[in-house]
Length: 150
Image (cartoon, rainbow, N blue to C red; front, top):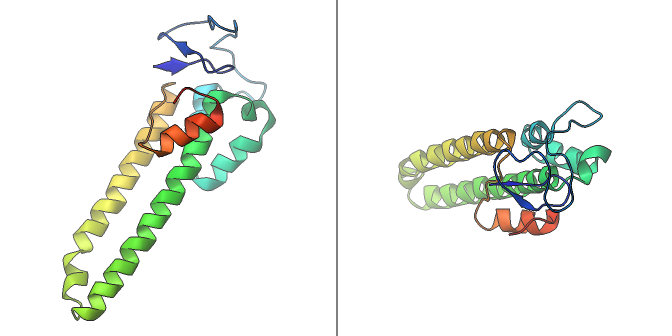
């Protein structure tokens, strides 16, 4: 499922022009980046590139890039919060169980890190393909903020 870069209208795959506003869907910006490349690059350095693409002039008005930049920011905040929470739980149980539970839940920490990394790569890949992948809860918030249908 793809959306118009200008107005957010739902488009069929391979549509060259938006049926709602008439905007070209294959046009490159003046900076030389297509919308899908800018959407993928919004995920590259987490919160920092998300903010950069929300502020840069040719991209801040593009619904597709805005969605990916906002979802990137929300995803990174959630990922950092989950790391922090996992660390607090590990220390708490590690102190009371004299390290046994801290060692026992270490594989869960590895799975959390690996899962977040795989999701981050998939988000960049789907943005580069011109698709919108909604992370549960976070994707709906990002869609509302970017002006896309949730």
